[in-house]
Amino acid sequence: MKKINDLESYWMPFTANRDFKKDPRIVCSAEGMYYKSQEGNDILDATAGLWCVNAGHNRKKINEAITKQLSVLDYAPCFQFGHPKAFELANRISEIFPEGMNHVFFTNSGSEAVDTTLKIALAYHRARGKGTKTRLIGRERGYHGVGFGGISVGGMPRNRQYFGTLLSGVDHLPHTFDHERNAFSRGEPEFGEEFADKLEDIIALHDASTIAAVIVEPMAGSTGVLPPPKGYLKKLRSICTKHDILLIFDEVITGFGRLGTATASDYFGVVPDIISCAKGITNGVIPMGGAVVKDEIYETMLDEADNPIELFHGYTYSGHPIAAAAGLATLEIYKEENLFERASELSPYMEEVAHSLKGENHIIDIRNIGLVASLELMPREGAVGSRGYELMKRMWDKGVMVRFTQDTMAVTPPLIAERKHIDEMFDKTREALKEIN
Ligand code: PXG
Picture 1 (cartoon, rainbow, N blue to C red):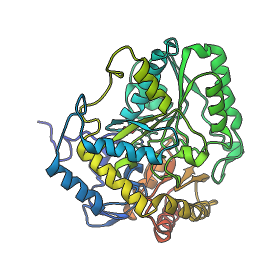
Picture 2 (picture 1 turned 30 degrees about the horizontal axis):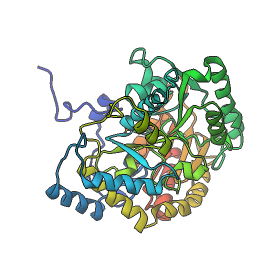
Picture 3 (picture 1 turned 90 degrees about the vertical axis):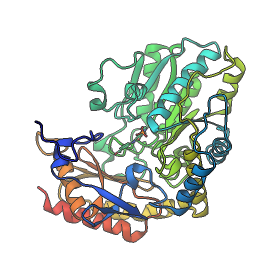
Picture 4 (picture 1 turned 135 degrees about the vertical axis):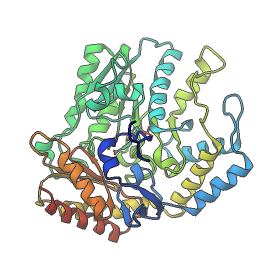
């Protein structure tokens, strides 16, 4: 009989299961900026969970809102019926999202939020008599979750190569990473606005009458933190407008304060047509996501759709009352504690500390924007990712949780972080860098 230990049954996501189960890293509780490991060690959360616990762990206000909601209304369908909290949360999100984006379609995750934005874009063009506009344009090195829509427009090869032919009618912009010209940039890199011109080439090839939407992360996160070059997003916006193509910002990471503003759209002063969000919407406590659309899209769908049900799309748990209650409490915390401003105030400090690691062992680039910093290590010959993986494990042993994509480390702490936490993260990184070959 196969020997099964008590870790074997759980097939862990995006994890080297074999390696993990030999030497597991398990957390059992969390408070504020710290997890507690199974062994009882404090583990500083340098990743806000997975870019989601923006208000820090174990927030009483959220816990109480959830507990209260459970005893008032545990579940209610949102197909053809409704409940107050979903409407209330949509209103609160509209207030902090860009002007003129006042309609929210709820999902349960970022992946679902992304697929929802793509479906809305297609249905919208069709409703307004432009049913030939069906192509979707993503970007190399883009991450848009793991649904078939998201991996089709996404540009991380491993997330695509195992899964067949994906959606047809998809093309990709080039990524904006330009190590030679932009290494060790602070904030938006100086060079690369012209990468947006490639959109004109794609449009010339396919014709605008066949293109529904362009989807990009305003700041690419999962692929190793790539802030957009100066002027790049504005250029994408103006090309999309010129050709009647919708611009979708995937703000699953950037939404709710990561750059020190409610949205990256706010931060960069560029307003897309649709925004996907998730993660920080509920502080990661209860799964939830959303697609937020411009008024014109919602109104066109309601006026022009060929059926009283304007959009044949939705999830059993869209607008779930417990998630909505968690979302409302989370947004209140962000507001009461000025957490977005706080992140903005802390980010120059994090920038300084992060860039002070220039010259350390293995470091070939350092990037940052908002409360995000990344350190890129020189990959080992023939073993891309192995140095990063080892550093991540070292950091765990030193009591800091960090995320690596191959050899790039991302530091994305909760927005409640203080200077001492930033110091701890980077001091331990400096130490660990000296210890690995
Ligand atoms: N879009 C973007 C831009 C994301 O970053 C998703 C969609 C998918 O969200 P869900 O909720 O379906 O996972 C994401 C998720 C990392 C990391 O280490 C990032 C994500 C998830 C897990 C790890 O960078 N982002």
